[in-house]
Image 1: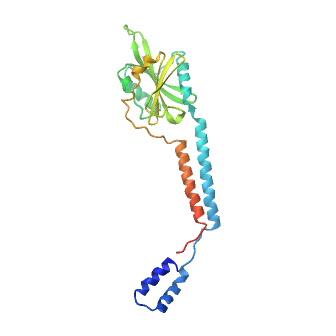
Image 2: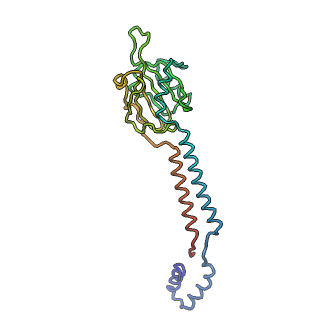
Image 3: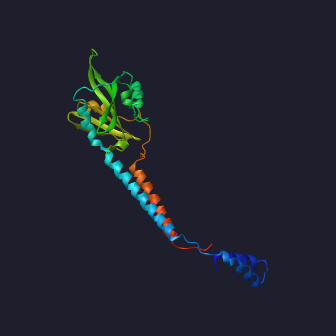
Length: 250
């Protein structure tokens, strides 16, 4: 006897009906008790949908991974960029004014000028192509000649984490020297910050700090997130398809 029939039987038994009366009532309801199954075609469609979701997820994951640039390509591009003095289409001694200009050129909305650079006088900014990906450059005077005729610069480079692979993944600075330049890089949110100067590391180190940037680090919405979503969706579809192969009493 199914659970439903047992419940009905107990219900009418409590009303002091005879066994024959209870069985007569149950017999009239047996027609409603039937097994419901998913048609084989529906199960096949669910399995096909799961396969499609996985295939699309893999395609997006592969395409995004293939088009991202190695972060290791940034440092050589910096050195190359300053092989000849680059044009700076926007010039200002106010770093915030330069930041506002870079935002109009597509820079990440949540990027901030690091605290250690805010007390420096800025020179100008530019958008630089790094193997097909934009990098937003701002130049600051780290040392100026007494007569104001020039000096030494430190350069802030901003890139999007989603455009580069193998980049820094935390606020802990990664430092290295390359081709006579010193570099320090770290990540906050979806932004990778890189400081660079054509001098030994001791000249760059005083400007390497992230205390002035308070946004929390989070994983960007990228191919990995999409892949996890695709697998989870496919798993649910397959589970429904498998479960629908059996039947259940109603």
